[in-house]
Image (cartoon, rainbow, N blue to C red; front, side, top):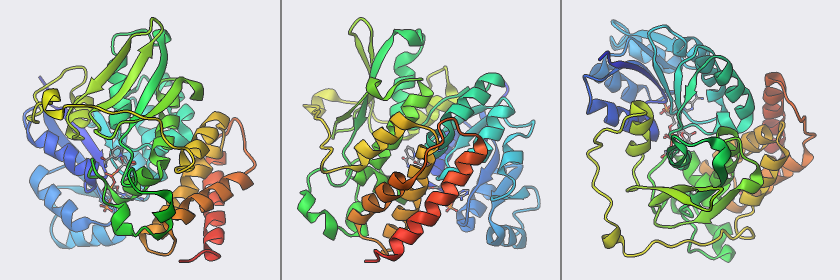
Length: 387
Ligand SMILES: NC(=O)c1ccc[n+]([C@@H]2O[C@H](COP(=O)([O-])OP(=O)(O)OC[C@H]3O[C@@H](n4cnc5c(N)ncnc54)[C@H](OP(=O)(O)O)[C@@H]3O)[C@@H](O)[C@H]2O)c1
């Protein structure tokens, strides 16, 4: 059996590192042909030494560093801001793992589906802002999309072998983030360190902040609408703090299928890489008796207004998801740099969303223009709100 040739966009991030951990266990079955970082070129350099990819990408500083340290001898180095769309479309690529964060993933995602590749997105931003375009192009070019995001992977697994028309709705689980047990009256004082202390998942900083506001769950609602062609009304968010059930699918006959596992991203990553097969992950077995109980409750929309905001944006569609995402990226970055209070993240994002004139059936250009407009307005709002 020929090994599968894999490119990992964002190999230096939380998902990217886990993807390499999966691949490391199966050296005969996978060949890493491309690795990319943004500015963590030291880690990228180590990964290049270890996996000998034919291609790698970094920003200008990174390229200089890699060339100076000999990493470019056997590896062609590309520019991460300009070349990812060409890199993923190379003939020698079978699977593209999209583990980079942010809307910058849209162009390489689009290019990968247009080249008919198998695409395994952990990145949700591209699907949120331009999901319909991506799915349409994937369909046209017979590209397969196998989600890595654990909730979407769970739904994907529950639907396997079933006619999608049998699906009634999905129950999207949320672990609840760092604030699950903290009263709203304390939210305005929360520090970056407290917010980054996620009880269940160890992830990148941006997604961890989004988990605390529940914006991440809102993005996932939009992501699930796109991936599984659902209306907002067919998706119910259920808080499940143990994070053992990764989501559920309810069928027309009332049966509910769930996917359960230990809380570890290596499982959905590996499944996307080995699909439709299941291989040993080496992870510890799920022990439900040891768990004793699994709990569920409805999210408190008043404490976490970002969730209903995102749901409303998902219902309206058009350029609004792009605006929501761009404003959130700006506000979260400002919070992480300690320039904005935690509670102001929502105020900034909601303020930008409210001002937007939605374009219902946007072309790619409209989506980019909405992104640019939203970032500019978010920055303007934030100037009047510094900590
Ligand atoms: N972490 C999880 O468990 C998890 C679960 C589900 C979904 N996701 C989604 O997966 C994506 C990655 O999350 P993460 O937690 O792994 O993020 P992360 O740890 O912050 O890593 C992000 C990766 O993207 C690269 N990157 C950042 N900005 C870039 C840009 N403008 N162009 C190209 N590459 C860029 C980073 O490079 P440098 O290291 O050089 O900065 C890094 O390799 C996000 O969309 C997130 O929502 C993550």
